[in-house]
Length: 353
Image (cartoon, rainbow, N blue to C red; front, top):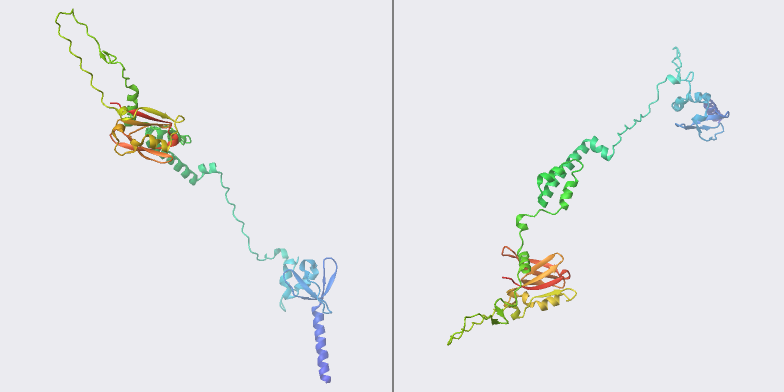
């Protein structure tokens, strides 16, 4: 029992001596002093354990004075955290081996710098030029200019074909830098040049011209007066002269469209309600595939804002449109679609010749 008490006393004394050896005084920059053992060190701060076992708040390394930092540097476990904060190397820290001369102290300024990750600065990118400056200072800009220039000349070629204009003229104007872009647009607005075939009047135009130039029939034929033959002067009468021969009556005129019931007429919008019912009722004979004798020698002239359409037959009709068959100069025919609301006049004219 006495031996056990002796062992406990020795253990307690050893623990107390160990704590006394590890405990130290650490002076702060504000003049205060922390006493105890340094535990839990890290890169920014340390915890001081007071002699009574109480843990003080964590204290940053920058708050300690140089003397305290040198004291911390004596501990190999803490030296790595405070080495960069020391102004000069602490004396006796990491001393030379026994029997060797102590190495001279090396100022902290001459020590090799700590290894840090080098941050490379990003190279400055060249400033991009503006749109117009980029067209003349970059390869892509020059390529775009050449493409636009070639497209303008090709557009002039296509417009010259479409509007029947001289290719050399249109393409030459389009080749003028900067101004030539307007050349294809200007020629596209102009009307096309008509060919010799297009300059010739169509059958409808010839019929209209003949109807206007045809001379009007004289109601009193020459040599006739009220249907009687003009008397002829004779010599002095002789006795027993032969009686004059009777005048042969004029041949009766051939029956015309008027005799068949169709007479030339003009129907104007405003005076007449031109609609589907009116056309079907008034011109029913023109809807037949084979015209009758009354309609064979008559023309239906449809007057619209776009011009006159001469037809011989009505193909079909709806509430808003009418399709008429118009003979052509080459002997063929063409169906034209007209809007009923656009029809201003309908002429019923006899065929001349």
